Length: 416
Image (cartoon, rainbow, N blue to C red):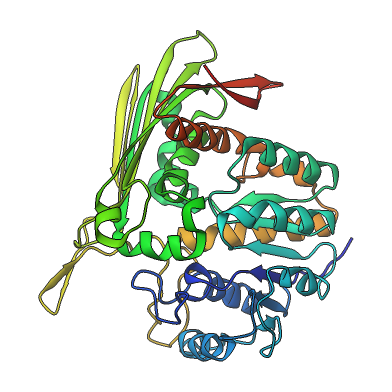
């Protein structure tokens, strides 16, 4: 047990962590970074330890990263841009640099994983083996079998292992979660999320053919839908379909432009079937928002919908209309040059996670206490089951896949 807050090691130094793309340019959407900015403020508040590490696969480029963080974080009073970096600046490429970086941290510390999707399982496995608490970027894993294996390992070791599903902390999303039971049996849910093709180029420069837009974007609303259901309805059958041609013609990227996953859900209490449709695209045209995102829910007693891209708030700058989302992460300094983004849902997911880790370290709680309140590996298996089945369906031209269960959790997926 420890009364000291955990130190944090971040594996990955890309767009969501630092605000920088692979070529060193600043992201159009997340130029301020998210992870480093949030962690700097959590450190100032004493919710994490003084040591924050960043780990990449090469020492090249750390000077650019440090300069960017000094500008970006240093503009806020009392926020420090002091980060440890691994490997050393003189090091050449090493895909296992995270192993040496973890040697500088101890059991009970936190490992945040923001690397290419295909590496999540290997890195998270090592962190859990070392007794470190883990938060993983979406999608957690490609395969349900990997998810189950690490959920069991985390449970055995009293390790808090979560997926960074920040949508749950959006005030609109959270408000509907509290009211969804009033709408009766689940009947239909649809979600749409899209970003411009620059994201396809960026993600394929990192992941190659190992990723697709469904894993990247549909993972947000699939998690939200499963969270809404809370076990009252479960996904049982999945098909997926994709549109192609635009990215291949424009950039030579052989991947689906748009993917729709359709899942049949079964209401547990009466066996009634509902349907979920999740569409993701990265060929959106330039508009007033970088990310289009909305959902619709239909129950036997009523319905609800949300346009998460537009909050009734617009700004015209240089003759261009913009529709900001002030609920995600406010990065504008206050009049006193203080950081004031603590209420944003991009911040809240980290705050809730680190507070839970600190409680576990103090012996005041155990990891299993958070299954119902945080997106733990133990409570998000259905998300990976749907994504895994959807990817397998795409590879088989829309063939249906069945999700099998044991002890109320998905166990396997199987082609019909």
